[in-house]
Image (tube, rainbow, N blue to C red; front, side, top):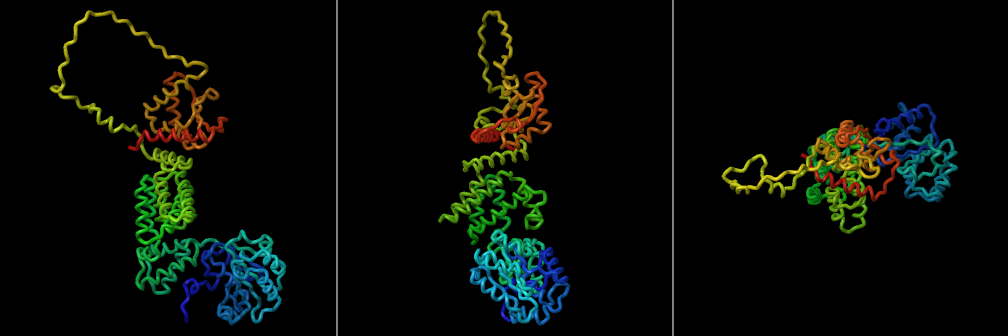
Length: 549
């Protein structure tokens, strides 16, 4: 018997073998057992999810002489005849190649003839979305009221291209992406049946690379099993199919967080030197950054990301180092790089520039990059203790304050000249100047209030306060934040920070004034994008005056 590819040799033979589509197979089994069959079915979903396999099982099940719990027996003469193509009552058509109106008219003419041996004549039209508009129009009447001996099964990966008039005439089933566990279980069964051995982490990686498609996973598995007759290890998998090791993705992710463009370029160079295409790596990196964003934004990322629990735990640790803004900026920049690389003859250079901009956003002058830089600094502020930075040059000039100079090194002061005592006039008493005009004392002495906050342990919160504009609204000190500074508003709004500001106001102007945080919308104020940009630049400057201890 001629060799068959794994995805053909292991194609499901009964509904119970279709992985991850129980919501569909159970319904079809019940319809077959009760005889309540529709005249047309539409199977839609991404590639490799079992649409064609289910259609072939359904074609045998409706004609089987001895069905078992809604499944075809695959032993009767009808089932065997359909399997070996000796019975021509099951017709498979490719909608991509037979999509013109004349092809559909040939089908309509054939529908009028009774089946030769089977109970029903079944027409399976794959990739039906490729049929032309004229072809669909010609099929509509037959699809709506076909003869009793005819069953249509349409399959498509692009539901949006199916006309509504066709959708309304079919019983529709949506095939889900197959889960990682379902794919891995099927692969394990196939490996064991072939008498082969494969490391669990390698098997899981093959399942993950299938990306929800059983057919893709089986194609990769077939390539891997052909590498060696012995046990397949994880390192063998990396060298066989040229995928990017997870360690490289985590290394480059940490390089982004550490603002280390050199490390990011080194990782890309290692990938290319190992024979892997930069396009493949950048595609994997884009998907990896997308997964990090999912981990950052969702409470239960395991339901969205198709990966192992160990890798998910590592991703959660890395995602904590990123701000949301930086991840969004990274994905946007990566998408632009992929598009630019395809149109450029220097794809590697385009990718390297994108990696440097991700690692060191200061090289990008766009507003999105500035948001990412500020949000990154805020993330570091939230995870560390900040203190003023002393210039190294100044520090070298200053003597160590706690070490007095030796006595012998200090020259004796010259004798002071004797002068007759003079009457000393009392210095005039200084009275604090009252603010001019109608400016409230809080606003007039706002810098002094911030100095008090700085001197009493408020250094970490000052960059957040600087994002706000102080105003007196309803006899309250209102810190008004622009729309892009809602994270700063959240930090300042904490009870301890508001209390510190309240104490500072009371100490400086000797008045008991309540403090509140408002957004521009709440305060009835609008701001231009240019003003916001300048505020962000000022905030970034403030952040750079402090460092993490």
